[in-house]
Figure 1 (tube, helix red, strand yellow):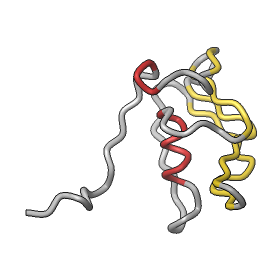
Figure 2 (spheres, rainbow, N blue to C red):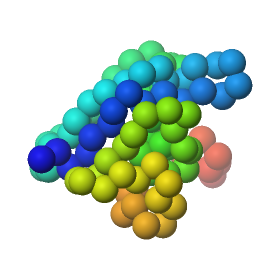
Figure 3 (cartoon, rainbow, N blue to C red):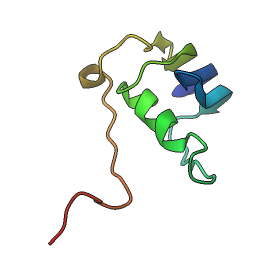
Length: 89
């Protein structure tokens, strides 16, 4: 059974399709990277997995639990961005 399962996931912002009909599985212990050009939906996908965004359509499962409506604080997901654009020293 996969730890994360994304089924027919789409996220739209108005008329902009940030992510369109994506399906994938990540098994427990598996290391996965999302690769693609700027604007292809990588960050939108991760923010949706974390619960910051809700899917426009599709389903996101952690194990057997549908988490589309589970708040971020109950998902046990962390994110670290590549660089801290807002921090200047």
